[in-house]
Image 1 (cartoon, helix red, strand yellow):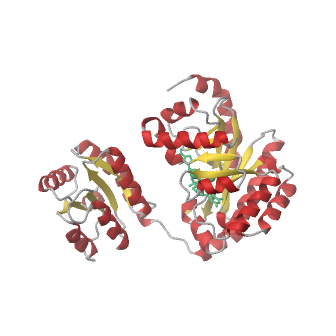
Image 2 (cartoon, rainbow, N blue to C red):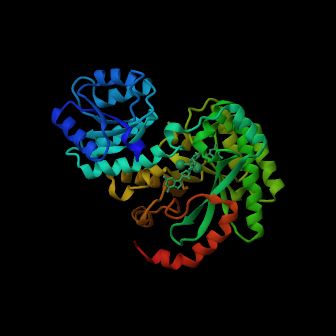
Image 3 (spheres, rainbow, N blue to C red):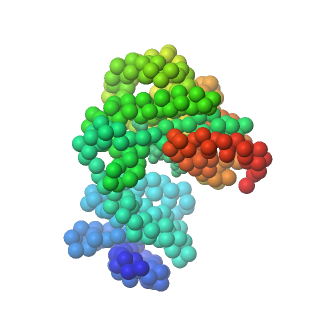
Length: 407
Ligand code: C2E
Ligand code: CA
Ligand code: CA
């Protein structure tokens, strides 16, 4: 692997012994281009020099002077495109917090290592990273699309919906699917929402994109009903969609055209941006609920004012964000937030959907809670519409086994 050897790694740690130890571990793993610094200022000067494109930084969080968190902020300001591993003697929770902070700066973080660092854990993180480094579609080399490209793609109807199954936690039966937009790019293949939703929102294209997703999802709902598949279909709505009072009429008309009922549809709303047109949004959501559309508060626990929204809008479903679901069985903080979310939902008579169920531990934990519906890779990944029928068939054939096994 020649590309492997060419990777440049920078170590930033104030302890000389750690710098030596980490260099040794890295070179044993085949990485030879290693630079080490004891303070953030010098490391930044090195990184900022155009000749020194660094691919990976091993960063100690606790340092005198500029600490690791401050260093990360400077890194973000100089548009660092490489990856990062955090190292610290702090406890797991502190490291997780630091990892989250790094993510808010859009820096690719491979993970964290607790001191004393074991070379096995380090090589584990590097293995995760190398395939993506060698693969062109890795985040570092990800293509950024222009608003014009997205606009053209919308008019050419290059967007399709994938659907991810949701099951009833008590019976295992499939109760619905969530529609997730995918761009079938003629050259680049399947492009995921994180590469087009925000750009569409920022450039006034989100209404057209949402209408396309809705039209497709509603006619698909009707097709499934013709096959006697009674699925509730959830679609993601952007806050920006709610600024327009026409949105209600569009939806009301679209259910009529498709020949379905508004109660077959759930609109998932995330509070990601502070609402600019608050009164319009509240009116639109209120009227949609009056028209019997399901309303779900998505990514619960991550928004700016999830609670304020709950007070204002009669949501009938709460989706616990996957950040509080995967790993909930073994993490006290996640469990506290998960349980609090369930308790809010119960008191407000809302159905709870847990998303991001990834393994047996998550699933077993959910089953012993009052959660109603589960969604996640453990059950199924999002799939094209034409795969849903067969998937449900196979799933239902195995439900008994699934519900009675515990690992
Ligand atoms: P979301 O609404 O939170 O959707 C769930 C995302 O989690 C999906 O990513 C899904 O593929 C992923 N996921 C499902 N199960 C698991 C799991 O077990 N583990 C993990 N780690 N992830 C899981 P996707 O499809 O990439 O969508 C990302 C986000 O883009 C969505 O997050 C949603 O906010 C947004 N989005 C997708 N389609 C649309 C759309 O048509 N309109 C709008 N406005 N937003 C959309
Ligand atoms: Ca969603
Ligand atoms: Ca979510």
